[in-house]
Length: 59
Image 1 (cartoon, one colour):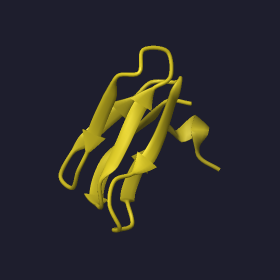
Image 2 (cartoon, helix red, strand yellow; image 1 turned 180 degrees about the vertical axis):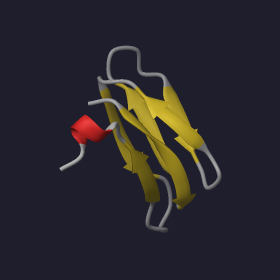
Image 3 (spheres, helix red, strand yellow; image 1 turned 180 degrees about the horizontal axis):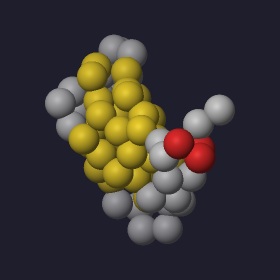
Image 4 (cartoon, helix red, strand yellow; image 1 turned 135 degrees about the vertical axis):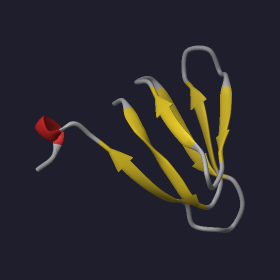
């Protein structure tokens, strides 16, 4: 699934499954993550994200 958002807390590492490329997302980062990824929390702090979606994807 595609994700677009803003990180307000914690550190998240996103790894693209096909290529193995990793990207770190930290507080203050805007991000756009394409489908085909996995992610894990880097450290002990909870990751807090604001996820943005077009109106047709909100329920």
